[in-house]
Amino acid sequence: MLSQKTIDLVKSTVPALEANGTTVTSTFYKMMFAAHPELLNIFNHVNQAQGRQQTALANTVLAAAKYIDKLETIVPVVNQIAHKHRGLGIKPEHYPIVGEFLLKAIKEVMGDAATDEIINAWAESYGAIAQVFIDIEHNMYESAEKQENGWLDFKEFEVVKKVKESNVITSFYLKAKDGKGVPTFIPGQYITVKVKIPTETYILNRQYSLSCAPGHDYFRISVKREADHDPNGKVSNYLHDFINEGDTLEISAPAGEFTLNEREDAPIALISGGVGLTPMMSMLEALANSGSKREVSYIHSARSEEFHAFKDAVLENISKLENGRVFFGYDKPLNKEGNHHFEGYITKSFLQNIVDENTVCYICGPVPFLKNIVTILQEIGLKDENIRYEFFGPAMNLTAE
Ligand code: HEM
Image (cartoon, rainbow, N blue to C red; front, side, top):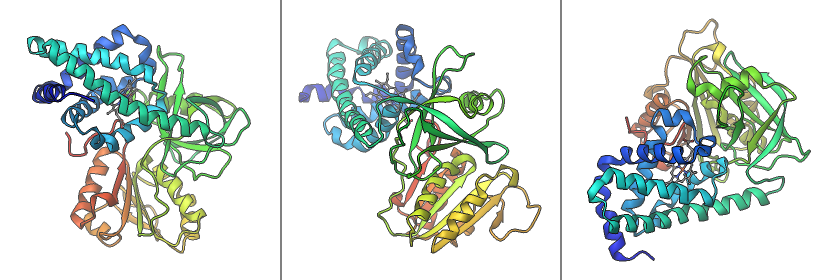
């Protein structure tokens, strides 16, 4: 139990942290990686370079400081991060390292204002916050390992099939090399792929949504090629160029909270932009396989026909549904007439004809796409709990710059 004094001291640092939150965490990362370069095998260097992880961690530390006397309030946020941590193999022994350098950074940034009392209060509070993460992650590791065909951390999978889905998206079908099947998962979840690229100093980890429904003896991920020197595309482009059928990839068990709730029966809309269609493919196939009677609208926006992946698979799954509808949209005018097509961007007047305030919407795509769709759905009057989204990179508030 934290004493009232500790709670008050930590809370009193929130304004200073709010003013310097990003400096605290960037100082923290610099010092931590200098002392523990091996951690660069876990962290995403592109996120570091672009300051994204700094923002994510700073925000979470602030949130924790504000709610230090009622930490149960942050559990929903912790759950989402804990899925990511579990998918990356973060362990209890990592927490004291983060704690040590976070405190050093707070001390350095606050200067004389960081009295021993404040630092001790923070040490105690960090311990309490870390314990919330460690406990939740412990349960997640346990259930990932205990599940049928489950495992802890990373396991070797063989690429049994590599299929070009569009001029930028390619699928990799993965089977466990130990001959076991794959565990079940919830449509919408992702796996972490860990690769050692010969030209890179450190191991790289990237998360990819599973693009097939559970129930197969393989996993499928569908990966978008990025521009040649885009640092965000290091792993994706490596997979495209160098990973072929017969090759081995190390992957984590599925994780993530952006998931289809099959117990609900409200109308559902799966709305995606570009490669954001991957979790939707899993959700749509699962709905089709279960013979769902829900009203299902699949809405997908791609740059053009050449960039449009899984068109036939979507039409086939929609045809299996009693109440399925499909809408494809392209930025550019179409070459030929199609029944299901719209032109240009997804607008309010377009969506208004498809969803109402009771529709459960799952949205995935790049940040500008998400911002646009979420705003439209809010304007249409959907409740927050019916607007469910995921985008790539660390979770940030969509209203942030
Ligand atoms: C991701 C917070 C401890 C490694 C994240 C994210 C947050 C966060 C907010 C972004 C989640 C998202 O993308 O949705 C925290 C907090 C911690 C903590 C508050 C302590 C209480 C740790 C520890 C490690 C770690 C101990 C390992 C040394 C990572 C990694 C990512 C991540 C590798 C993925 C993002 C990236 O690679 O840049 N964490 N974390 N975290 N965390 Fe933590």
